[in-house]
Image (cartoon, rainbow, N blue to C red):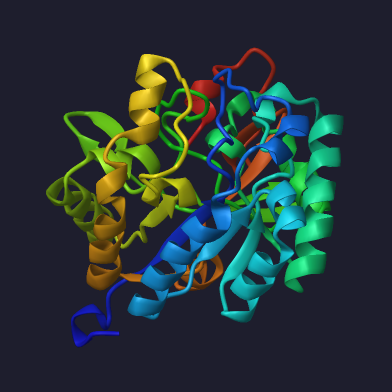
Length: 316
């Protein structure tokens, strides 16, 4: 690690480990998991590129992994674990949480954790919902996560988003108490500009925005003493991946600036300190306490009487 980065805030580097055809809310030939084995796999070779970038920077990351991918490529998961990277769950079949019943979600989660824990040899305590699909209407998922040993969720975008996003949610990590126990909710990083909250540090936002905008987002968060969470999908560094026939706007978001992603990630890894989600949270001195009450997240000790203005009670 260069002396320039010494003493900087440790940021979280996340990879949503999935295939190029794992698309949310768009009709493709691969909507049914039964078709997935018929598609060419790119996840191993694309992940190799990301691993080289991490090795260059001497950084570790959290690989939030689709269980189906771990079943098909167990040697990749073992390699990640042996290299000191953290393995988390990205569900088994990459389904949006709010499209599932609690029973379906629990079944899918259990299946993913079984394979990930067996293959990686890790406890597997972190989780990210596909498409950041943790909305207020599916906060019922939090007790299920905790019952299954998940202690960190990185599924919330504290800004408006297509198939997720909770505008007004805390920008800082919180400790959420549920009937099944407590877990940390570590929201995706955003920047504030012109009165709006805007994601900037991962996925299509990272590919679309210029480096000055991305660095502005880092500065804004670091000045508040807040670590940044960066995330990427393996397909986002692969200009040669097969192209899906997607709606125009979806296709733009899915493929914009893919040819420049690798170099952009290399610059970020050279400029800032990165580590796993667990290591990043270890550097956060205190977490505000919240609780799940009647399907909503409110400050610890708050009680929301029937008919009360719930928005007025929220501190997130």
